[in-house]
Image (cartoon, rainbow, N blue to C red; front, top):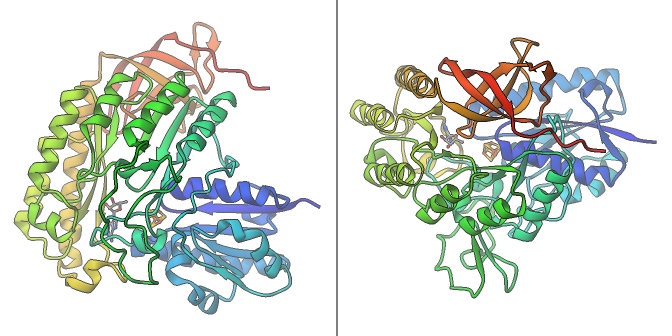
Length: 480
Ligand code: 5AD
Ligand code: SF4
């Protein structure tokens, strides 16, 4: 009998893709994905620990599972991802409804863990790995629009930003075999996908050494809870594939496919990557470059590895290579010791860069992190909130300015689906990752998701563009 699994993802794009990898692993074990928890034999919550609020949301959701279990005695509930890693057995003890706890590097063991759960026992595996990249696992695409897909190119993070829980929940950084990345992109293209986003916590430190198939140096085992060791010297290898090389390999392998990536790190972003981006039309002109703060003092305490000046130099380099490139960022308001002057520097940085878009957060202290151990969380909540509101208000203006600048231009847009607001309109994105809304009908033909069109941008808001369709560039590939 077919078993049914429902997977709910919280947090970042990497988590969304991990859920697809999990669905791929479970497919071999006879599970088909379903669209709601109510129809499932197994509910998996793929969780996020990045801020306290993210964890709170999931803890509430876990409680709701009690109602489902009351109705379906055979239902099993599992917690995956970053919270599984952070809370471990505690989750099983505190939340009786949970049967299974599996960390981000242990998904291959799901079939055996589920067997144990099937006999009425609880099961847990939160071992982190130095090698696991799920390289050859074929993800089962969940909730897909059939047009855009995520491809994970590396896992973990070695950066140790003082505020961040990720190195503790996702472990050491490791890169995936470039051949398997290219093969996955080719397969997606063959199945009609038109855009891939290459994912990693810090894509700029992607490294693959051909000779032994493993990243070099600084990758000793991590004692539980201990800080990962500082990255050691990277021995020169004969054939090393860096991120710029990988981007180029993918751009050449699937020339009709749009390529995006996330996330860059200002301390590691090279001109070589920018040159490759500029060289290939199918690499989107959009960079997500988290700044976190505009103050060099705060950046130092955050252990970000760059100053305000360094960051601005990287912005100048982007503009030099790609004058039309969009830039987005992440900003944290109210990090430990942040003064009003530091905050003003963040606002001035935002104005100088003129971000297209930003994700903006109040600082939330996370257990085990450098900041939690070393600094007092001393900016009062009301003050954090006021600063955040100022940052959000300024970004709204900046986004509106950037978007208004596109009005009158002709943009290539990849249609992704039907607009949420109007069934008569479709939405897609331009190379700069801005949402473009266009009429559904063009010259008596209905436009389909997966079509590239040229659109003249007619108006804008701070969140999207409206356009008129000029012509179609391709017909979507019909997939048997
Ligand atoms: N508090 C607030 N925001 C955080 N981020 C990461 N950790 C924290 C934290 N403890 C933000 C950063 C990061 C984004 C993914 O989430 O801006 O870039
Ligand atoms: Fe959340 Fe970070 Fe884990 Fe992604 S890697 S799920 S953002 S804690």
